[in-house]
Length: 196
Image 1 (spheres, rainbow, N blue to C red):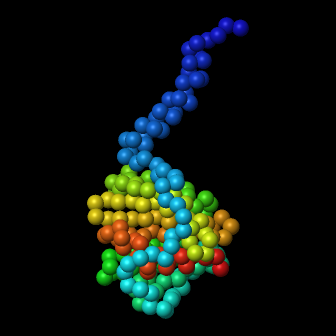
Image 2 (cartoon, rainbow, N blue to C red):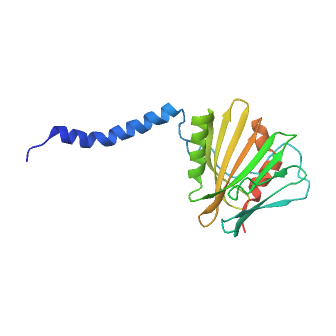
């Protein structure tokens, strides 16, 4: 059987060309994918900011049919709940005096996928720099995927976690200084996430 070099070259070259194009698209978009393993370990209790008041208010995470699969808590003396934008976005919490905002969204599937995707979009479309990423855990033993981003004086962290079955939640935390995202009040919210 005679070997056709032109056909063989195309066959072997197509996967290489596809990989090269994907790499080029990633560079052109300015969004290197988050690198795994840069962040690890438990969140801990946090440090700085006002202490907890002792009062808590709940946030429920529900399926589209209204069945609640998870919940979290926050200190109502510090965070103010804002109206839900959609059923998939059950709550947004704001601490206006501190310039901190936390927004929850329902997710499904692997918890790292929505965080990686959102980080890539923020890097491409809003010129955020991806600073670090990795697996973290809260006090309830839930495994989160975290991505830290920055654009100028805006610091954003994405936290994605599977809570029950395929369902989970993504929490976007934003502040004007990175140390504010380590405040006791913020870490309390992350550590309170649990299945119902």
